[in-house]
Amino acid sequence: MAFVTSLLNWFRRHLVVIAGLLTLAYLLLPNVVVTVFSFNKPNGRFNYEWQRFSTDAWKDPCGVAGLCGSLSLSLQIALWATLGATALGTAIAFALVRYRFRARGAINSLIFLPMAMPEVVMAASLLTLFLNMGARLGFWTVLIAHIMFCLSFVVTAVKARVMSMDPRLEQAAQDLYAGPFQTFVRVTLPIAAPGIAAGALLAFALSFDDFIITNFNAGSTVTFPMFVWGSAQRGTPVQINVVGTAMFVVAVLFVLASMAVGNRRTRRKA
Image (cartoon, rainbow, N blue to C red):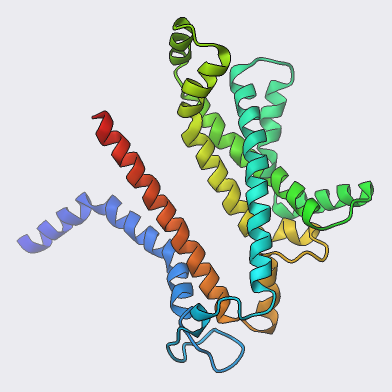
């Protein structure tokens, strides 16, 4: 009886941690399945059942026609969309926090619309706009659509960081005869950098992973998500799992490196 009581008490004390670990395991389970099946060698076209262990797909990740081309295109679009959305989103976030102007409240509300509405609505609206303008669907229409879609997320991330900034730090820099440009570069920008980086990473992930908006506005352009969707109808190459695993590992390594750099800076300050 005492053992059961102590076990229940331990469980109550660590309930939040256990729930968090179970949630994390649930979220990571699809990545584990993708990783495991990247070493599979199916007998047929569909990589849905485990057959036998093989590293052939890892040795030749571009063995499927069009896979690496679509991956390269998705990376290009994600990179340029991240740069565009981050630059515009950062400027909008600073304007909304630091300045008072007409329609400021309306703009604040409009910023959240792309996040609130279904993607298919925005995709159809952008397609209608491009068709009415006579634009040719392809790389540039996808890029513009991705910037429009990612902009709201960048604004939200940067705005939260800017709102938490202490204005006295910038005032102190000005008291020490720093000009507006010096104050922004040496004080404001370093403080806002974590929010800007978070918004940029989120924009990159959303752009690279997007299918609905891309499918409406791509024309004959094939990005990696569209390649995966098309391949799933005819068969699922193991190389798709290889690319997915590689992207996941790179993201995890990037996060770990960021945490290591942050911990090192904290130790130096201490």
